[in-house]
Length: 218
Image (cartoon, rainbow, N blue to C red):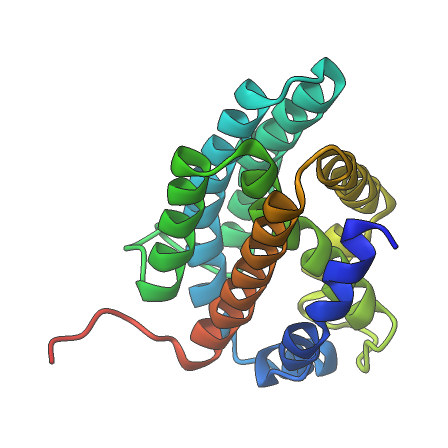
């Protein structure tokens, strides 16, 4: 069994919790409150800036030139292409600015930066994989179950269910499997741990959007 297959099996409880979140179910039904989606978009836009820099840092550490070029492409997609997409969503949903990075986004971003700064490139790549893989799975999950002909969130769904995005997902999985294949057992275990931790942060990110968790005085 490939590293990715075994690790995805271990992550099923987290993935199941994600797709059963009210945020995901209400997006599927087209009933999600717009204020919650606005909160999500602002945090996601802030996250992408950090994510892009992490992907670029991984590219610089990868020994295989093809892998490095792939991660540079992912970094460009995160920083440029998806930023443009978010700006179009900002207009559509009347969002004036990005606002402040809130707790869940802050913790996720700084976890990734810590991993890429202090762990091996194999572990860092594994930590970024849930953002690809889970988004692709969630996009397809929602697209297959959309309950409203004119779902107000259809553009977001189409983005992450699209063939181009899922080609990147497949490629990123293959790179992580190649890294795992040449790594020690201890490193593979750390890769799995990093993947599961980041998968939990994906869950927490959407949960925070549902409840709009913000920095508040105690």
